Image (cartoon, rainbow, N blue to C red; front, side):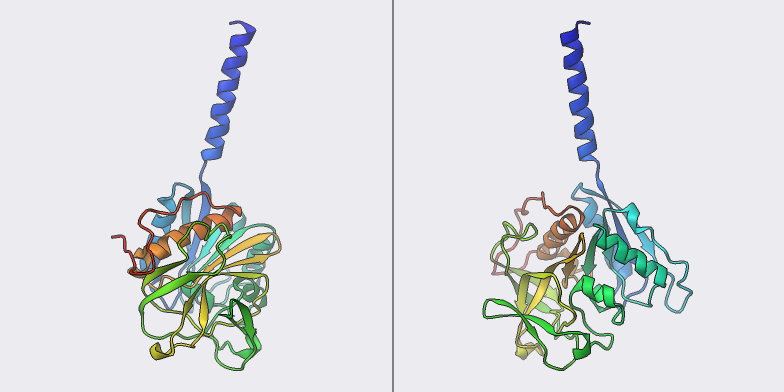
Amino acid sequence: MCRKDLFFVCSVWMLFAMSAVAAEPMKALIIDGQNNHDWKQTTPILKKLLEETGLFTVDVITSPPKGAEMSRFAPKFTDYDVVVSNYNGAPWSEATKRALVEYVSQGGGLVIYHAADNAFPKWEEYNEMIAIGGWGGRNEKSGPYLVWRDGKAVLDTSPGKGGGHGPRRDFLITIRNADHPITRGLPPAFMHYSDELYSWLRGPAKNVTILATSFSDKKYRGSGEHEPMLMAIRLGKGRVFHTALGHSGPQCQSVAFIATFQRGTEWAATGNVTQKVPKDFPGPDAPVLRK
């Protein structure tokens, strides 16, 4: 074989090897095991949604049940590109809490899914990671309300509860930051299916970008505010995507949830989004469901 042919063969092999490496999926971890929501139903759905993108392989680690010893619950977060929390339960050990904070602050990705923002009301760093949360005794001591008023994010220090919602219903989601990788290319407003519209969420609200909001109408026992539904948070070198959507299985069939969850998880893992907006993504008139 002449030198020119050898060079050609080597070049083709290198390109093949590089493409194989580039195509290797990222590793995602879903944490569940305790929740006031049906994690046994939603975790398999979340896993499937991530795997169908072709971007992720997904492991699931389930905590001990409520009331059991938690000291041995110690996921190795650093083995993963992104961690998805479907957890709302008993406190973790100090070592596990410290490991998650270090993982995120050093560049790891974290996704806070729906009721995971109810968790750990006394854990200061967790509340910084999620920006705002609800329930668990949260009140004005937990931080201000974060709402969207007059075209901007507002911190409202009014006293009161942290967390609430009215009856499940379809609601409109409005993009507030169209330049972020997660929301880039999405319609300015779109419908989501029959969900709990989380309201009165409060917390440190540091380093948070509101990506999209929904109006919490008082006629549905809401706050009367435009409430954050999708958020991007920075902690150190890490990225956190916080979605308030997705109460249970039916809500996770909503394309509004599916696409934003998939895109948000990719952003948390990489800082970028390569996924195209799906052709069945809803507009402002009616939600779209995938069976």
